[in-house]
Image (cartoon, rainbow, N blue to C red; front, side):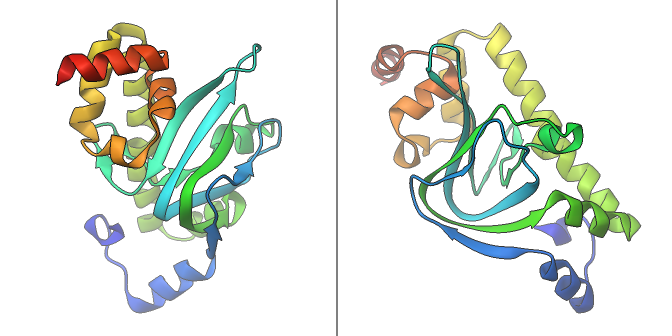
Length: 191
């Protein structure tokens, strides 16, 4: 995936791999709790996770789903809250593992140091920041503000055709910003 953007020789690969640890995480694990500063980046190798926040009434709202694959909104391979890290504030998000998963994990501090050492890594970081964060967040917020629930549902199916095989319906409803009953109605209407 990296070599689509920049060339990397064997020594560079070895050096890059040194900063990451492999973590195997069981389904149901909360790997980060809201209120704590998020200081790592999790690159998903396999599995499924989500980030969510709880409103003042205790209702959970799924912010993002993380799994291997690319959507029209960009990559969703990286789990982090760099706003929390760079602003040194508690994250608003919880990060939950939805199925047994494997991640490559490093601190954002170590990643920043690594990226700053060579221009091609900075280029890769800029591309991935755009594809992973800016593009996805921009399109997600505009979607929530401008599209109907039916339009958001249809776009989700277009982007992630197998999402219902991977993600529970109540997480999908939360991600779309609709009640579970509304999601059931949308599913029935689209058949």
